[in-house]
Amino acid sequence: MDRIRIKGGRPLSGDIAIGGAKNAALPLMAAGLLTEERLELHNVPRLADIDTMAALLAQHGIAVEPDGRVLRLGGAITNTEAPYDIVRKMRASVLVLGPLLARVGEARVSLPGGCAIGTRPVDLHLKGLEQMGAEIRLDAGYIHAAVRGRLRGATIVLPFASVGATENLLMAAALADGQTVLVNAAREPEIGDLVACLVAMGARIAGTGTDRLVIEGVAQLTGARHAILPDRIETGTYACAAAITGGSVRLVGAQMEHLGAVARVLREAGVEIEEQPDALLVRRLNGLHGADAMTEPYPGFPTDMQAQYMALMAVAEGAAMVTETIFENRFMHVPELNRMGARINVHGASAIVRGVPMLSGAPVMATDLRASVSLVLAGLAARGETVVNRVYHLDRGYEAVERKLAACGAEIVREEG
Ligand code: UD1
Image (tube, rainbow, N blue to C red):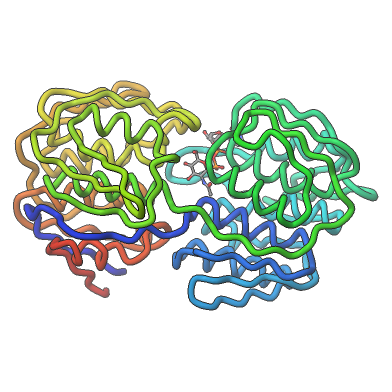
């Protein structure tokens, strides 16, 4: 397994290109199941999760043609099973359920099961599809779903604004018979991106950007071309990298619009963020100070930025309270950060981070993507050497992380193992 070795203490300086959003690309690829015609996605990031979704689509019979950052999808569905071996690698695989049901009336999708950051059930996806007329049975670790004829439009009230459930139901509703109203829908920008692509494919959807999406089902969708929006989590992560090293980095292609609460909290902590025509300039000229953050559905502070922000707060002056409300077990980075000299105490869903003047390098490892990158950030600021193990987590969601950081002056190398 590869490792990343970092010698900390160098302020970052330079440009970092921000890629297309992983969490938009995955549902957009699943949308390729909604039509036999060609769906051409642009600005696709090069990530392990994208390869996993491509393998899943290929398994369903879809032709997947990568061409640099362009991905062309098309063809008939020949198989409706999403096998355990693929789904266990990536929960987002469950996003094929709605499209398969809507297109061909049946699907057999492995239950994703638990993961490092919590139990993460898919009950809201299933209940919504049942309301649309699907018959769903769980057997031997698989979801067996079928519908006679077409799915029917329904009014579905989500008890929690789940991102994945909103996406699955949105795609199913696009091809359902009649009107679907999704109440308390998630409002993440990646959902707006999916809506934009579905509309380009001929779907009729109103209410984009709000928590009430109204979908008039159509009989058929067509091919389309769509460019994926920039990754706001990658943007926030490199903004933290600039801040934690006291550096100055231009995040090329990043957009302020979707940073929302992250920009607000970083500024409160003493980080400067300036909008430029093609980039965001992020720098820290003075000291960092503790500022609280609580994760919430968009437009709140994203849970996917919690670990990185905690690494930043570990070296701020004063204390910060970081509260996690989305996942029940998303503090696995805390013991590792503490091994690097951080002073973090977890009390239930909140962590008190008491800033220290300096972290110290250590061998560390993490069990999920964002936790892993938080250790990379800590390593950039720490005295001495940090070795981050289990790099495959990073490769799921960060393209060329060591190259992007090294180009800005970080002493960081990947060691193949
Ligand atoms: C997506 C993101 C992930 C991010 C998360 C929250 C993708 C591919 N992944 O994941 O990076 O951390 O949003 O912003 O876009 N829940 C249920 N029942 C359900 C569905 C969800 O109880 O049927 C719970 C989950 O266990 C979790 C919470 O709702 O506690 C949020 O989950 P959800 O918004 O669905 O996240 P994902 O779509 O899995």
